[in-house]
Length: 254
Ligand code: ATP
Ligand code: MG
Image 1 (cartoon, rainbow, N blue to C red):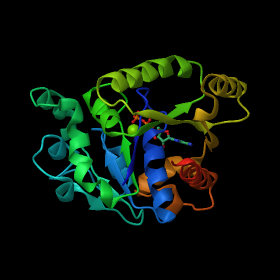
Image 2: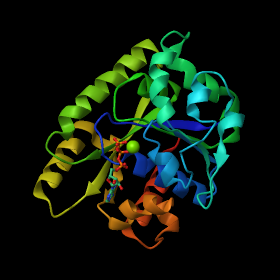
Image 3: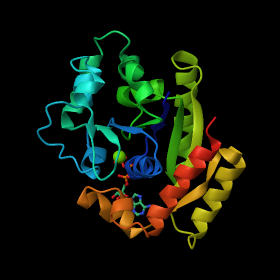
Image 4: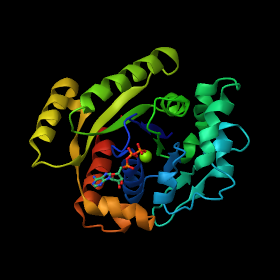
C-alpha cells in the first residue's frame, strides 16, 4: 500500500514543487513505484515533469469532479520513471464546482483509494493556499512534508499550517501526521537562516529533516528543460540533496 505524502505550505515559492518533482524522481530512481499528483492550477509540477500542461484533456480536475478515474488521467513520465496526474489552469474552477458536491474535502482521497496498491509512494503537490484543494491533499494524505525557507516570517506562517493540520485531524483525517519539515534554498553563510534553523529544531525537534536542500542553480534550471534535476545534472548538490532526502524518508518509514 502506498504511503501518501502531501507537500504543503500556504506560503508561496518555498520549494513545494521542486521538492515534489525531485523527491518523486529520487524515490523512483531507487526502485520505488511513485505517483505524483499535481494539485495546483499553476501546473508547475506538470511542466517540470516534462508534460505540456496546455491542451491536456484529462487532468486532476476531471478526477476531482468524478468525470474520470485515476487510470484515465495518469501518465507515465520519462526520464523521471514515475506516474503523474497532471494539472492546468482549469483546476482553478474546481473549488467553486466542488462546493455543491458531497464530501467535497474527500474527493481526492476517494479517487486514490483503488490505486493505492499500485504504488509505494503517492506525493501530492499542494497549491500555495489553505483552500479546498489543499484540504483535499491533506485529507488524502497519511502525512505532510512542509518545505520552508529559513527566513524571518517562516515560523509565523508555520503556525497557521500546523493549526490547519490540527483542524484536519479533528474534522476529517484523525491519523494525519507531520512527516517532516524540510529546510529549502538554504544558504549556510546567512546568519538569519542559521538562527531560524536553530529555532525550528528547538520547536519541532526530530520532525526537522536532517537533510538540508541548498540553494542550487541546477535545481532552478531543471524545470525549464522539463527534467528532474537528477536527469539535468546528477552530480549537482541539489540532485544529491534530494537523493539524501529520499533515503532519509525510506529509513524512517514505518
Ligand atoms: P508555489 O507556492 O508558487 O507553488 P513552490 O513552493 O512550489 O511555489 P517552487 O516552485 O518549488 O516553490 O520554487 C520557487 C522558485 O525557487 C522556483 O523558481 C524554483 O526553481 C526555485 N527553487 C526552489 N528550490 C530551489 C533551490 N533549492 N535552489 C535554487 N532555486 C530553487
Ligand atoms: Mg508549486
